Image (tube, rainbow, N blue to C red; front, side):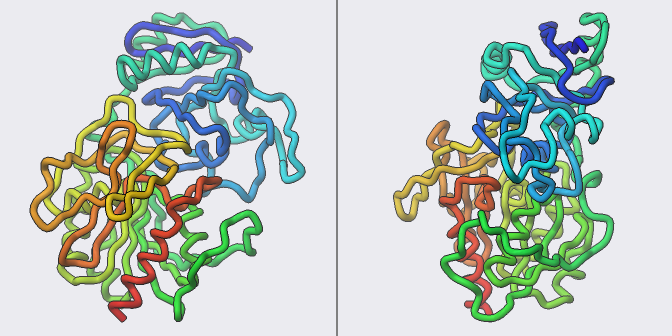
Length: 373
C-alpha cells in the first residue's frame, strides 16, 4: 500500500506503508542509532513524535516481547528507508511490520531518509503527517501545519502511571552489564514517573535497590513521608518549562536535603528548580553514539541520547556546577548542586540496548544515599 509523508514546510515524500493503515501526525525527528529500534518505539519520551531512523535497514533482528521500555508503543509514527521482511534472531517473537501493525503504529518505508534527515538538520525538526493509501499531499501538508507545537506542551500527564506501585524485578537479564558495586543494604528509592523507561528500573534493581514509582503530579511530601534513601526524577516527553507541578516538587525535595538523581527530563526539571532556564534545540540529540565529556575526570563517554530541549548554561545560578558537556555542540549534559546531594544528566546512563559507559552514575547515586544513611 502506498504511503505519504508531508512536512509543514511543504515537502512531501511518497513511499510504502510499513505498519498499520491510517494516518498520524506529530513532530518529525531523526535518530542515528544503529540498533534499539524497539526501545525507541516504546520509549515514552517519543510521545507526539514521528521518528526517522537514519540507519538504512531497520527490523533485521525483529521484535522481542521482553525488550519493551514501557507498557506499549509510544511513537506517533515511524519512518525507515528499508524495512527488513525477516527477523534473523533467536529471541525474536515477530517482525517489525507485524509489531507496528498489531500496535496500530502508522509507518512509512522506501523514502530517502538521508534527504529527509538533511532537511531536518538544516531547517530543524518540524511538524509532519503520514497517511496510507491515496491522499492529496497538499491536504497532508495542511494537517502537518495544524499539529500543536512541542514548545508549551505538557505531555507527561498522558504517559505517567495512574497509581503508585512497587517495582518487581523481572528474572535476571543475561545481556545486561553486571553492576560493579551493589548497595550495602536494600536502598529505598522513590521515583517520579514522567515517562520512565523500564531499563532505569532494571538498573536500580540490579544495583540492589527497592523502587516505588509515583505518578508525576504526586506531592513531594508524599514521597518524603515514605522516608526514602533517595528520590529519582525520570525521563519523559514534552516541554520541561511548563511542568510547574514537577518543578515545585523538585524544589521541595532539595529543601529536604534528600539525595536526588535526574535523567533527561528529570535533569531539565531539576535545572529549572535550581533557577536555570531551558530552550528548544534546533533538531535535538537522538542516537546511541553521542560523545560526552566528564569535566571532573576528562574522560569521554559514548552515550545514548533522546531530547529536544537543553539547559542554558548561562542561566545557572551560583552553587550549580556543570559536570558534563556534549562534545558535538558544547551543550550542558550534566549538573551537580555544590551544597546539596543533587545531581543529574541529560543523557541516558541506563542505555538499553547500549552503550554502557555511563552506568557508573548509578553507583554515584548509591554513594550519595549510603552517605546520608
